[in-house]
Length: 359
Image (cartoon, rainbow, N blue to C red; front, side):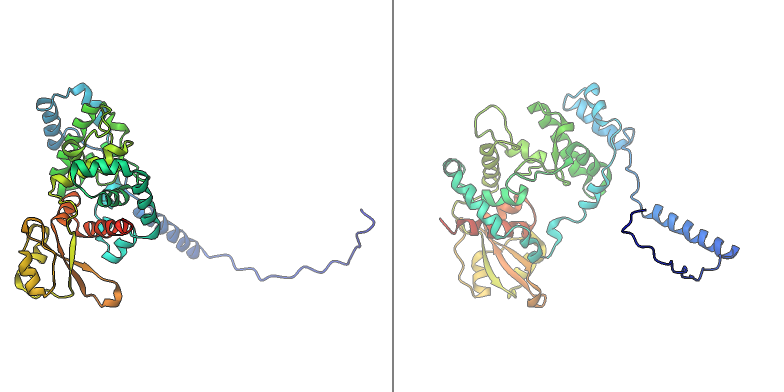
């Protein structure tokens, strides 16, 4: 024992009151509680993914169409489809898209100083490219960059979902839009074959879009362009192809260069036709002069005197639930062809305005 360690008389141990042993009834109750807890945990666990049934009528019809109409072979298709399972996360997310948020919350996701600074930087770096794209397609560069920012955070987030599995999940497990995703699944296989892409290697969003522009497969096949002329249409890595494809999409939707996007109408609509147009959504349009007279506002003349849509967006809570009404011009309507949500089109419009402030 070391010499510098002093011995002290030990204290008697402190007595602690022991809990009595549980009775048999208590033990049985405890076991029941543990059993119920275990059963509850099992009940709350996510169900196992559902295996896709290739013998179902929907898949028999799909495979027959791919073979008979589009020239695929059964040897090509079976390795892709065999053993495929639904993705439960896709089915959960498709019912709660970001556009379901109130507009102020949705707007905050994208319209901020960091995004605006990054967008202006991209416009400066790619100025010669945007000069050529504007000249060729007549689409304003700030809107192209705004869409790029919102769709993929300037190409940094293009989605991590297995796109082939996603499209099958939505075709087989989302009845409300099964026909739409059946078409997108076919379009995806066609574009993969045409471009030498392995369908099992493509990643995208939970809604079936992919690449930096987040095109659906049908949009890729209709609007994607090889603007860098390298023989490949690449919306994953080629900025010329990405920006020009967005411009081509908007041009086909009726874009007018330097045209207005929207106009503020106030917190109340004063004519029944405007109320009806708002209620019916983007498919209903009204004469711009009627909007100007009934709302008593000075509106810019739309290109070719085209009609306007009527939009209502939520305001911050301090406005006590009152909507903010706007008129959507043809360029705003073109953005809603890219994404049908008025909230999406409004964020694109406001972000594009912020990017254009330095020009």
